[in-house]
Length: 292
Image 1 (cartoon, rainbow, N blue to C red):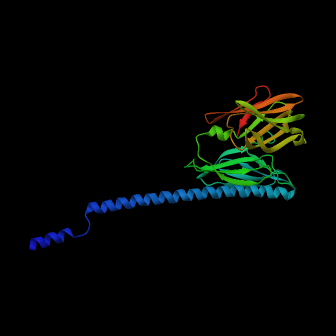
Image 2: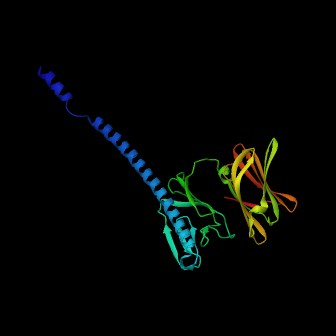
Image 3: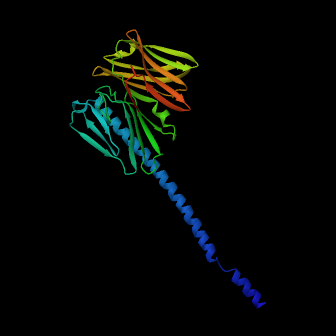
């Protein structure tokens, strides 16, 4: 009886060393997961915050330009680790540094004038900008986590999240600049042409969209399927700089032309082969391209 009682007592005492180690291991794994989730959430919040900070300073430059503060207009210069709000007359600068875990990695702005680089300048009184486009920011340690700041010609701002995709040519095909090497003034028709077995064209009266040497058209084109497009051109040293933005990628083949002084001049061709978009400027009239 005594031996049986002792045996039962020994087997009812606490946990074994192995059991304790298992519990500790489980706790450490759970703690690691919790820390990783918290850090990821914190980084995402930080990325969103800096997108808003950049947007706020873009709005500051626009607001000061509208009010002609200190009798000048203002702009924003973008670099990898900072932005600078500047007065065009050189009188003042405001530098905003990004945190070490956030970087500006994609600057896609219309260069007007050519060589303006990573600058966005706003017009006095109206707040409009010829340097419209997108600014992309991302986490340094997790580059797949990205945000995009979109600025239109009126200086209005929107924020979007990137969709992670390996199909970068499709994304890039949406915003393309061309240095045509000739002047589109005197053009009468802007033509979109879809080739898919048959040919479908959409002609737009170009004469209605010229103003003081610039060309600005945006609207819906219907060439088999409808999509919104924007075409903006300006003269630089006798050559038209042309910016073409499509809100969707082409499904087959899309050609763009200007009918200029009675001659149909092809600007470019967008071709979709297996989901990859190729942009090919016409060798005679399309000049050189700069994909944004």
